[in-house]
Image (cartoon, rainbow, N blue to C red):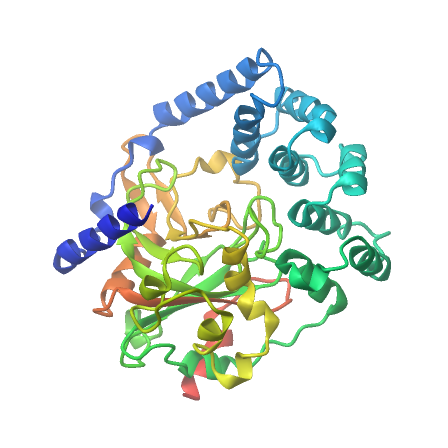
Length: 416
């Protein structure tokens, strides 16, 4: 893993002078109508074949992979329902990892049809992550009583406040109204001298798009057309819509290290370069802190990056604790996803992910050429800073039920 990261970083250094992206030259074979049809045919074939593969401890991984794939596509058919039904029946005997995959599939695709399975797992699990999945599932129902669940968490897990997933779960249950600290303070913060800072602002309800802006090492914000502040829309939504402190959840709030950029080999992410970010604990501190910190991971080093007004704000540490509990591979990328899976959703043509930050890209299904790429705009703005190392800061600004706009952020920039 360390070798792969090093090679990616070295490759970004070597091609940096020639890195500006021309969207008109972007091509994706995956965008072609024939490729779309082939993908769906192969996915349907996998679903059909899974019924021939008896579900047991040796096949759980294959079943889990399929459950997560259909969840990522938000794909629902009669056969998928049957797959989840069989998986649900087996789940009480399955491993914790398999139980998580089943819970994710139910939450994502059929939240009202498999409540008995959810109830069974809730009664028996001792896994903090799965337990948090299920409490978040229950929180969407009118009968949900926060006080009862807080009491249950503390009784079942006496050490709950030392378990990040449960500490955050209790925090959000106890704090229905959360006031975000000063945006002016976080926007003026240097983090580390001479680095590029990317800000991504969102609502607590991640089904509403957010926006991303970029600050140069000299403290100025990248400008776009008409000398206005550059921004693009961005989605920080996982298909599960679980909180960011949980695996497979939304993009966590907090600080990510920007360690370069890369071109993903994943066809659905596409050919447009992505900002390569790393979560705490994912890489050594020397790389994550850009050589300013070495040694073992320590929350105090992360805290020292923050302005004083943010140091005691627990949500800004989501990324830190998500990394501690094992989250990995969260980047800022475009998309060649088949929009027919998502076109009825309010945030389309933005597409959800498994916790990454995604931008809008549309493609011709007859030529495979790019039609629109906010990801290319984002990358070109990023390259224009002259510094491809720095930090990404993800922030939920409030709980309004609408997309974030640049007009909401500009007053805080103007006061700098």
